[in-house]
Amino acid sequence: MNQKDIEKIAHLARLDVSEQECVSYAEDLSRILGLIEQMNAIATEHVAPMAQPETTALRFREDAVTMNGDPDRLLALAPACAHGLYLVPRVIE
Amino acid sequence: MSETLAELVRGLAAGQYSSVELVDASLGRIRRHADLNAFITVDEEAARAAAAAADQARAAGATGLLLGVPFAHKDIFCTAGMRTTCASRMLAGFVAPYDATVVARLRAHGAVTMGKTNMDEFAMGSSNETSYFGPVRNPWDRARVPGGSSGGSAAAVAAGLVPAATGTDTGGSIRQPAAFCGITGLKPSYGRVSRYGLIAFASSLDQAGPMARSAEDCAYVLAAMAGFDERDATASERPVDDYVGALSGDLAGLRIGVVREHFGAGLDGAIGSAILAALAEFERLGATLVDVSLPNSAASLPCYYVLAPAEASSNLARYDGVRYGYRATGYRDLEDMYKKTRGEGFGAEVKRRIMIGTYALSSGYYDAYYLKALKLRRLVADDFAAAFAQCDLIAGPTAPTTAFALGAKMDDPVSMYMNDIYTIPVNLAGLPALSMPAGFVGGLPVGLQLVGRYLDEARLLRAAHRYQQATDWHRRVPPLS
Image (cartoon, rainbow over the protein chains, first blue to last red):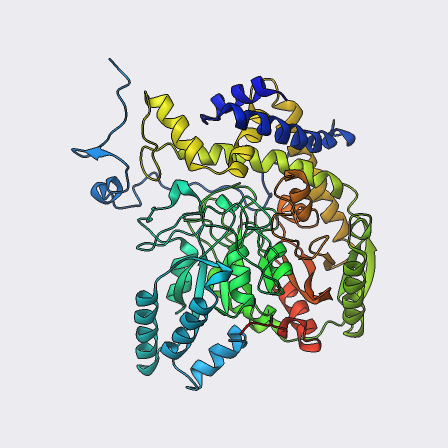
């Protein structure tokens, strides 16, 4: 993995990474990928994938409101809000 | 405070001391040993008020499983009115608008919350060194790490600041720090304890559990934590066993599987000897040892380092600087705001894992990484199923070494990851497992791991309890003033 790869991945992950950090992340991620490559030592052609422990079947519930909305309390957590809305930089000119 | 939680429960019930007295003693120790950095937040006033309320309730005839017992929560559980940081700059000022189910249940059983314990940032780490609030120190040797990610909870219990605390375990984050600090920690089966209000790292692996001095203590805390929760879609609906009641009984007929692969290269030889001595004690107590094999065990580590980062990269996408948490200043536009917020809000290890996960899930790489890892996960789970056809529990070391020096592994993420080689397979399979003290090497605690069948926590706790009745490793406390 090189600096260019890191820049691309960091963009996909919406992470600001400095040029200097790119160098060390390229080294770290290469090492981690080296570990991950060890997966290839085991054949898995006829194995069914397992996404989570197979315990109980996922449940359905009524499509109903279960929490009391409290917009003021939730908005109070936001870095910037006004008039009951979250504020973000302008996206439409 | 060297008493176990179970002893404090009985002492409170017998009127030997009040909750206010216990909470004051706990606050005194938290202050005196502040250099351990075990806590991120302590709320003295709220703890004293809750203790006074517990004493009043008891005087009025109330009995709660943990009524009046000082308790701490890993700072990954949401607590209404007390900040929840996940040891990250991203959430350094965050106060959740609700309680995690685990927090609510423990409070309903009478536990008094002293505060929130330090941890690796977003639970990503095995040494508690990735915390935005600084590393935790091991009470047995302050130059060493307490393990991670639940390092603050482990150090707080080991140093007697609180008798018990919650932890979470995605790849060993309860068991490895329990081993490094010489306490008992249980990772329950996936689905046994609600994840509602537990800040998500890797949702198919995360599980909350108790950390305390003894298996008996863990039985009390698990009894309060466990059970179905409709707000967690993966919570098990199966009835909860009587963990405290199940502690009594002997080990006659119990078959303990010893994993051949866990005694190979990579394990500190002195730890291997301590574990074998503990297994011999189990034989004296009536158990039978059988050799078992987990042939795909070695693939667990690479498999985990695809799956956990992949899930983390999705889960941590929510931190965007819009609805809550940190927001950077001086951005050009929305995308720049996201990037600067996340670049400044997350630490290096969290960023590494987000990038690995993003890469593994990106177009063109999915089959080679994510799908391959999902298939290996099944092989690892199948290995356990085959082993459990021959035995009732599986035993081995919790970690390949004792607690290492602060800073020793921070430059090499892969050598840090090797710490969890024996614990990770258990998370992949979703099984319950505990670590308990089983000796010392060079003055540092050694942890024995016991793994059980799915939802068989009662048998696991009984075996550990029986061992702790015959030994006193869990009674050893670090030499603190």
